[in-house]
Image 1 (spheres, rainbow, N blue to C red):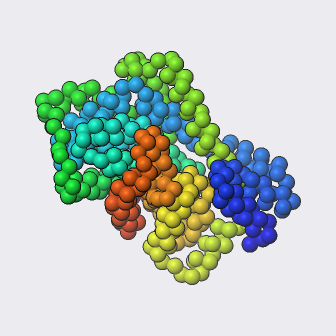
Image 2: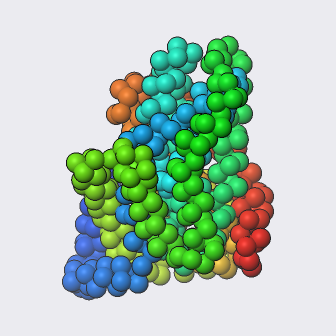
Image 3: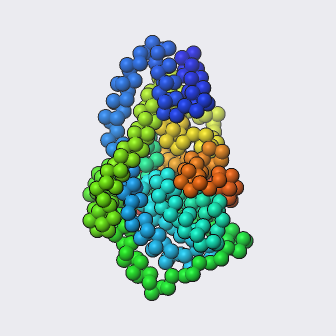
Amino acid sequence: MTLEFGLCLFTLFIMAGIGTPIAYAILLASFVYLTASGAGVGIAGKVLMDGLYNSFILLAVPLFIVAANIMNAGTISDRLLGFCVGLVGRFKGGLGHVNVVASLIFSGMSGSAIADAAGIGKIIIEMMTKSGHYTRGYAAAITAASATIGPIIPPSIPMVLYALVSNTSIGFLFLGGIVPGLFMGAVLMGMNYFISLRRGFLTEEPVPLRELPALTVNAFPALLMPGILLYGIYGGVTTPTEAAAVAAFYALILASAFYRALSIHAFYRILVESARSSAAVGLVIGGALILNFVVASENIPGMLADALVGLDVEPIIFLLGVNVLILLLGCVLDATTIILVIIPLFLPTCRELGIDLVHFGVVAVVNCMIGLITPPYGILLFVINAVTRIPLGEIIREVLPFLAVLIAALLVLILVPELVLWLPRIFGYLG
């Protein structure tokens, strides 16, 4: 490691340690390296523009954010929740199951865990606490845990970012996330059922089965969005980026014309909020592109690959080790930073060891999502604390059982690659 790179790392850790936003910490650390190495700060502009110019897929990120914010507006979320209550609310732990199923459905529209938690999650927490059958902390904890499914089932903003750094097909990544997302939903519902039995949570009054068809028809246009999105990509009609634009446009038409739940003023606020969210992600992406240039200049990925291959590490041991590291980093770093800065370091080693990059990418994204609810700095815990005012201590105490089963599910996904690769292979993936 050169002195210049040492200064870069020192600056990064110091700035992050004193609470500087990670995007600014990455940018400043990169500028320190470029200045110290004599390359000049001006090269950062070229690296940034080249990276953005060659990454058409990044346009999908703000479009998915707009679609998620529109779906959170008006009555769309209420209609979806009504459908979920009718479908699974009759079982033990009913509203907990509703929480998970709602996240599974909404994840097919937003691609963002935070959008799930702050939008439909807030509504379901109020429903659970008003029923009197659940504690505040439990309602918040299962909401945070179920929101982690959002970026696993397509569309997925983190998978778009992984496709950017790994040159992997975004279509096959989306397909690879479907079974793991459903698997995560199943283990969360299983844990919810077990806790409900153990604590004696009362069961909600079931919605009569005769009302289920009407609830389905009421929510059907919203339920169509994931199908439209997936058909566009896998039917060869649209690229992933164009599919994101179609998703945003469909959400707009649905909310404004079909459900008549979106005013001009509300749409303006959605665009402003989406621009802010996109800018926050964009800053991290820009910083990561420059830092990745620094890392590549130092040949860190190559040296890491040579060292690990030279040690004759078994692929499964490497996968387990990397995932333990990502799990630990997820306690202190956000998913975007891990995907854009940390994961590229291991991609050359994956190729050398013959590890499938679609499997690695889906598992890494699942891992990053688990980090969102991992104390002490899981961002979803803070988001739910901010929107509900439920004490953080209560949420953390109740989230631990769900965290445990999600880590167990992650281990299964690592050890059984076919859970990820089965669906992509049906659609022609040859990896």
